[in-house]
Image 1 (cartoon, helix red, strand yellow):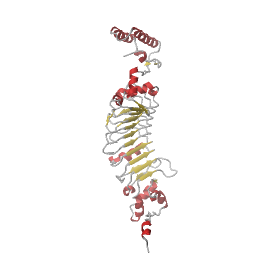
Image 2: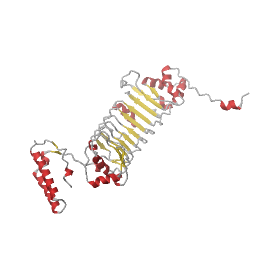
Image 3: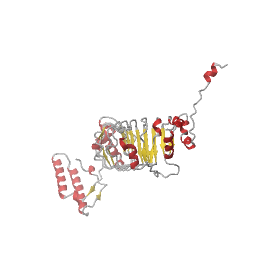
Image 4: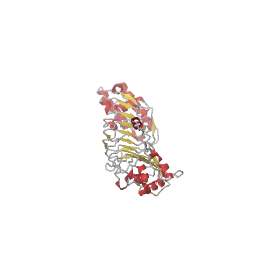
Length: 391
């Protein structure tokens, strides 16, 4: 007699997914036999076998496994040199899979991805040749209908070509990571739901994106940026990282940040302008959020409007490093400047002592310039105009 207890305590028998009969394939597809399917790693040779098997009547056992495939990684054969494969690589077997993630790492060739399922949400292209990465993404104006995250790293990309990352091809792209390439100008990022843009470790020295309404997170670490103008209008930008660049010009910060109304967090460590607290406070004073009475986060430290107001009240501390060329200062320049200051004295805007200090300072600069060769630069980094001049 079967008791009620035995009925309720009986555990359902776990379905045994059948073997394919091919030792190499069974090993590659073993992750799909786990209770929770894991990443499957395959080489071009295995891909060709799978393409064939899924079309056969006897291939149902393999198709049963592939119906559990959500994460596929394509890599070279063991011992094969990266990039040595140049033949056409067709990926057709995934048409039966609910694929969510695809990684292609260190293997060049002509990829044919016509049968990728529309469920795909994440693609990683790592250590490929530039033309290979571009052909995968842009050949035949492929539409990545559900793709949300795209990583293109170590692919030698030199530029983002016009009409490539279009809203038609990438209508749902939310994160774009183009780090570790050879890009010099950041441009051609069209309007879409794109929220996160990461372009670290390139050779970027200019930004040519006039207006972007969606990006809230922008990381440009380890590049060659010296000047933030023109920066563009990032209407939703909240976080900006410029770590490890060459930014040294404070004069254009006001213009660069003037329309970044939502920007409230900046990381700017390891730049020439971060050599003093005064420079950092000046940077904060350029942010619209501070003007609106809100805090900002600078290098992970909270800066309040009160701190910035105190800094401004004490007067500008921004130091200007000056390079002087002989043709830049003449007798006429000195005379015009002193004449202007004389008018200030007559109007009660400057005292006599300040006037004489200013005149003597400019005269010393002029004497130095007269003693150097034409077009020879002078480094007078220890002289700071703001210590003597009130414009």
